[in-house]
Image (tube, rainbow, N blue to C red):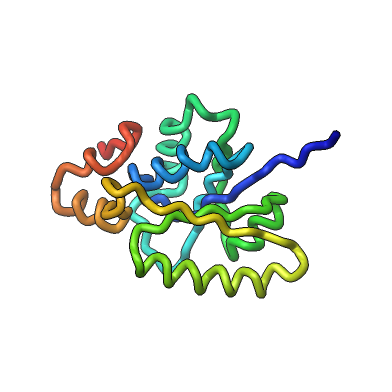
Length: 159
């Protein structure tokens, strides 16, 4: 019997990766055979860290899980990247009601764009103790000299 592997794309800027991202990915490993962490190049956002640095941090964070995790970067539409990678699942984390509304609308657009290629979006709610963490907040803490290390995996160190 030829078993199809369940591949999920987890897109984001990961600028930087946070403990919230980490939590969603680790919990999702029970649902999928492979997760592709897709670092998007969002031209609307001014990133603090290069894609190379973000990729290194993610690689170090998931070193022990590298057989189930792939790290890649992409430009353009997430849905196009899913099709290119033959992924049938899109993984998203929900921290609050605002995330839910935004993600719901993105899902509706993705369903229109993907035509006959079926992609199911799977939402995981952020764990309660990590639901307030965002890359935006972490960047603000870094810019203002605060202790960012309590919000990110130990692999993320700004030198």
